[in-house]
Length: 320
Image (cartoon, rainbow, N blue to C red):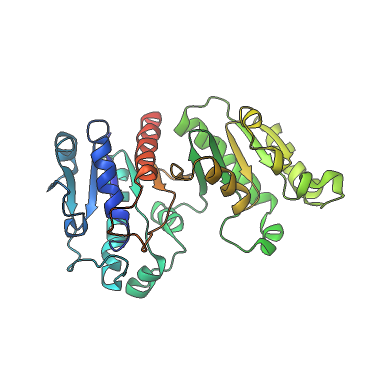
């Protein structure tokens, strides 16, 4: 079950955490790295491969590299727009590998959207939207996961003032259905228990603190329960994330970005994993950015990349 790793932004910590994750997992999970080996840390034992099928036999002793020549070295902390097309091609290659079945899952290292836009007119807000485009999928869902919590924000990178209008019945229902299907297919849960947070404090408190729960969320959840989904909510977000509450559900659907990400980053800041649900292939990513300020200094923590590779392998095994 080889996990393909796309290189991400060469000037960031992506190559470093990928190399360190391979070193930690070399006897556990075979991987292959797609990128220019000139961007890897100098002490990384690597070897180019001509075909992904060579990776499992090689991975225990050297990092298998599916070579992509970026044409120049990277300067840590200084993204080069000339590398943009190479970064995009590494992602596209990774998607092709998993769609053809020669890799079991794709783990993507962090990218820099501005460098991609400046160097290759990259028109997507980020990885998730680009992967959905490559897969021909209209809607996918972002999940953040660690050992103690899985959370899905229904709305993501928008201003808080725009959340009430963006949180439509269609968006909420699609998010919950995609999440339910992924919990069954990718995590082996026969009947996933889904908790849904309210939008307002105290889940609206019967309309005294907001009407969205009564007008939108409750009717949507009732329709989904009628379809057979096991759903609790809408629940007050401030009482959903203590240990006893988390034991009552498998995944939490939240109304907006910070409502979902604050609890998981509090519980496991270093080990969270970004998972894209709803794709026809497995995709995970470490839950951090390019960290230009520490790139090349040997300070980058590979914990999230290790967790992302492990989760990708487990999800692929569940699908298989």
